[in-house]
Length: 187
Length: 182
Image (cartoon, rainbow over all chains, first blue to last red; front, side):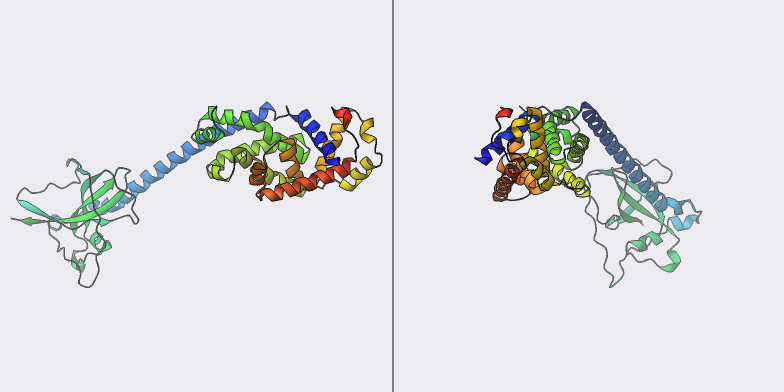
């Protein structure tokens, strides 16, 4: 019987408070927070795009920096031996699909002699782990031969400063994904 | 009518109208739960606001398999309230019981308003585990399942806490009749 009284008392309290709710100011503050959160997310995304672009620019800049150092013209066309060092495992090559070659009009890109055949290495990944690759561009650049060492290819000491040609695969987000080295077999 | 879950999904995808609709649909229940648990309107508004902010931040963690969205909101509110209540001095339930039990005819003498406030005080004086069960099931008409999801305990525990909470309220109120409230 006592519980009936309690239930009636509680029902009366519930009925009395049924219409009680938060003041409209709470809704206004929440909507303000909703918009602020949206803006924060947009700014965060923009910041990441900026950071990624900057990082990509720095990486490419680092790769291309030696190209600005004057070198004897003869070293730029010296073919480099592309033989893997015995007993040293080569890094895993990267499978590349859906690549569009950039138009070769920039000063940095090397005009290929029509009478020469290209001999290229496998692609070596520059990002590990690399995000999935959809589309991108391939840039032909000149690099010091020392760059070949960074991917595990052997280069003799006297040729470390020589310039070699390479294809850098750049993802559509601007990050360099992979590199391969090129030499020309003159017919 | 669009379900709570659909509104939440849209709100998390920056749909302001969906968020507003969800807030308007559920804020009253959250506010009243906080009010009956804390007895403080300002605290209840703060908690209501924090609950929906938390929903924006971590609404993707809501799992419909574990309960309704309302029980999820009650659960967030409960955690926020418990943190606040831990810092507050508990209501002296013994004093309240003595005052109300001193005269069996006390409710007859009270106006309806006074009676409701007495019931409110009695509810507030319950230990938190019993208060939660009473507020959810008896004041907000939540199902045992929803209450269990909000309180993160089995349904059987909700039932036993509810039974014990009602018994404690009966002792506190010490009434013979609630005619004045009808």
